[in-house]
Structures are given as structure tokens and as C-alpha cells.
Length: 107
Length: 123
Image (cartoon, rainbow over all chains, first blue to last red; front, top):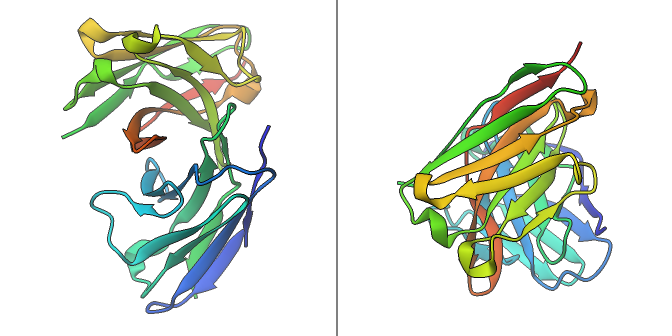
């Protein structure tokens, strides 16, 4: 199975900050990576697919990059609604696997 | 508007069975692969399995943790996805989400999710 490792596991930031979350795959997944945002008690919401393509309706403050094994999600100009947990997920091979999540908290 | 609505969750004893349903609307259900993903309380996301569409013979894939115990099926005439769960274990306790697989330029990814159904396995 492909292991997905996110860092950091948690992150404190202030409104207006720019933050970066990283995701590392245990083997090459090309660009078959998606980033999700999840708020407490809610379903995940896709933000970025194909490592860098913005999902329809998602604001451009979210951006993704990377290929192969190393990926990043960057969120610019943090707003209160952005504080949530973020997950990466690979869909190169079965089983589909997720990172453990990064909890973004208000400082 | 794409909508996915799960139902059928509840409390079941270890060794018991439960069937979840996911009612889809707002898109051509028969065109899409559909998956189940679960999330244990306070934990991360775990993929459960997939059913492909008719064009791909409705073939399925499962996570090792559920293979042989869970069965994913679909009824395109009812725009519905199902998860039959047998021989349930306490570690199957989770919120179960159905998710639509969208396809864009060769990327097969979860583009829409339901709100989830809670399954609790406990004596």
C-alpha cells in the first residue's frame, strides 16, 4: 500500500497568514493526488485534484503543487472559515489511501 | 445540484449485519464510479471500496480490512448505491460516506460526498 504522510499534523496560524501543508507519498504517484478540507461534523470537500488543478467553485487562495512523491497545499490570506482539517489522498493505485490529516487552528 | 444522501446507519452488535444506502440525485448516476469512505470517531479517513459503472461491468474493489465482509452494489434504475456489511466488528464503528468519483483529464477523484451515516458496533 502507498503511505501518505502529511506534515505538520497540526498548525496554528492567524487570520491573514499564508500557510503550507506538505504531503509525501511512499512511492511515485505521478500527480494523482487530491486535497480535501473537512470541518467538524461535515463531509470532506475537494479543493485540488491532479495535484494542482483547482476544483470548480473553490477560491484561488488555495493552490497545490508537486509531482512524484512530494506535494504541497498552500492557503493564502487565511480567513476564519479556512480553519479546518486538511487531508491529502492518492488515487494512483488501490487501495486508495489518505494522509493522516493536518489540523489548522487559529492562533 | 449534486446530492448524495446516506441512510441505514445505527447500532448493531458485533457479528451482526447492516445495509447502508446512498440516494443520488442531480447527475447521471449510471455514468459514475461510486465509493464508500469511512471515518472512525476522532480519526482520519479510510477508503472502504468502489463500484465501477456499467461500462466497466460494475466491477468492485475493496480495502483489505473489509474484503470478504462488505459488499458494494448499486441499482442504476433507482440512482442508489449500497453497502452490505456483514460480520461487523467494533473497529467498523465509523461515519460512512458515499462519494462520487468524478473524471477530469484522466483524474478519478472524489468530487462530491454525502453527509455520512453513523454505524456503531457495540454490545
